[in-house]
Image (spheres, rainbow over the protein chains, first blue to last red):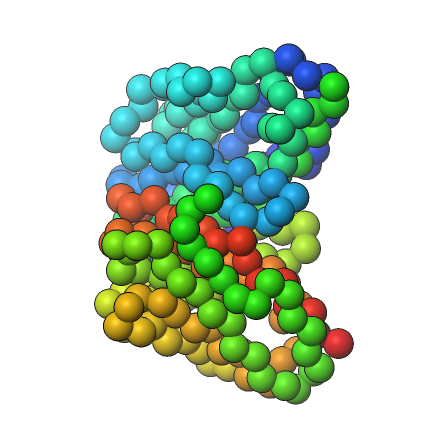
Length: 116
Length: 114
């Protein structure tokens, strides 16, 4: 069963608009990690952020921010003032403590298209 | 750039053949994980190597095998290639094993099986 769901297949915005990407996860573990990765057309996955299950504090890092809510099993990601270079596929991923080796379980990804 | 390199960049093989993909981990990293990414999908975990031993495996058949060398570089071998093996193969290195450590990905090898 899919443990990470990214319901949005594609989001198109005009430059400078904000973009929020949704991620819903499923796990029975009490200790787990959540990640966001970016995959530009070149194909390389770029690590963006990681949160552990004990830290629900939402933060802002530059133009990126995230909203982690355990009550709804959601880990949403926002790009503020989008730029054309933000165009990429964004993946949410889960790492459960029962997988001691840190296997990443990815969602299907959301394609973000930013037009000038 | 992450410092993780993969070779070759692209590869075309015929069904039934065997293929070897290579990955050099980032300096200081002792763990390498391999993922398969089919077109339009998220990456799927194949297996992980930690200090030259297989440390975990996903839902892939035994014809997918690997190695890790003393310098922590790694190989992914696939025998008896099938058409469904066509995908982008990504390797990721990390300082250790477990979700505590970020995995840094290479640019991938795109394998086409005809």
